[in-house]
Image 1 (tube, helix red, strand yellow):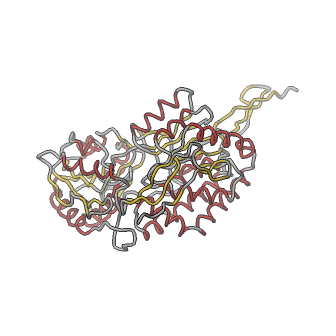
Image 2 (image 1 turned 60 degrees about the vertical axis):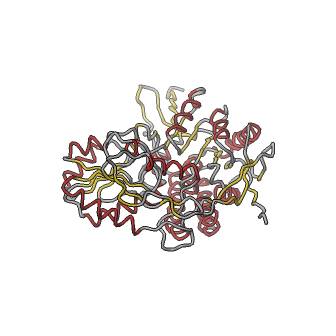
Image 3 (image 1 turned 135 degrees about the horizontal axis):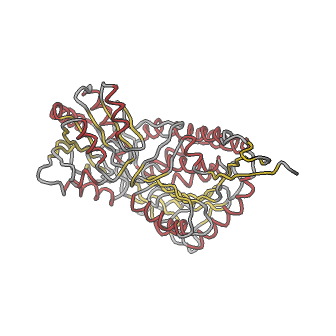
Length: 479
């Protein structure tokens, strides 16, 4: 007996709508492998409509005062708290994440981040006005950019939506946000929540696939395109945006090195690294999944890490004992499994390395040792619950191998030697360096990388600045 699927809809100009041509795609719960909803497969007509709505709303929202924008964002944050259980339910259906961890690890930072950007709306910074040429006064205006086309990923659908809309709205821009085609449910609910606070057209959600995203980026209306996703997707967005010189904000892949020196407290390091490597099934561009450990403690560390992995559970969202849920979709499961299947002969699987269960897309916590710097699994992002381990000789080699990948988003150093930690933080070519920890983020500090991890910052005043433009105003004093 078939179950009727829930119908998700676009949110355009203050109202929920189906795709103009009626096309839909099924949305699957990765914990069960079964469809639970349909979402619009939006095309050109839908993109034209949503961009027109955002453009029409921009002058009004742009001209609101920072205090008014702050007040609106604070109301949104309060609404997120009040409707937290609905958001959790939608996100768990989206992703299969553990219910308890979604409640404790995602809702509080999301609310905090919205409130941070509410405050940032009233803290625009610029150089003081002054006379830099005789008889003329110069001043700086910091202004919103315009319509922002934003594409969020499937690994943190709710939180990445917040990272995008909160600074954009705080700065006075209007937003067109597209969730991943596999995880639209929580974003559609966010549209309902925000729609009860903001004027119509200021915040819009459009569902669809890669083609929908391409149409958004190539559309002439947006002044900025922002994406969190793969390197390939980021390069495509940058190329498309270059045709009319849109601003681009890219948060792409990662391959975070975790450098463990011989003076490290091994049990403490293993505990922190395993949690940071397996949380969210390793589907995190900052995940602690590429460990470089000093040769003198290599065997002891690998043994302890493999034991920790064997004790970590993956399973259904309502199981309170699990650390992480399924991979997001069957293609991602295939990709992760493929890395293990293609391991070179010199590699050794110390733990895991297999699918779990016959329902959903679960993969066991995995540890692989014996790897070389040019191995595929070292150079490419796995985006799954797989931690690799390499053995290094000295600090110089650790730096060379840590930096020897295309990505440059995040890293960590584990040592009791303060001087070494400071040297490593200088030499590591990554946008974030954690010391004796890995993965904590706060609203006040920037998140973003270098090289093929993209450019632009999320969170912090730097992330807020990315959604503004600077104008020089000069006036004659001789009037």
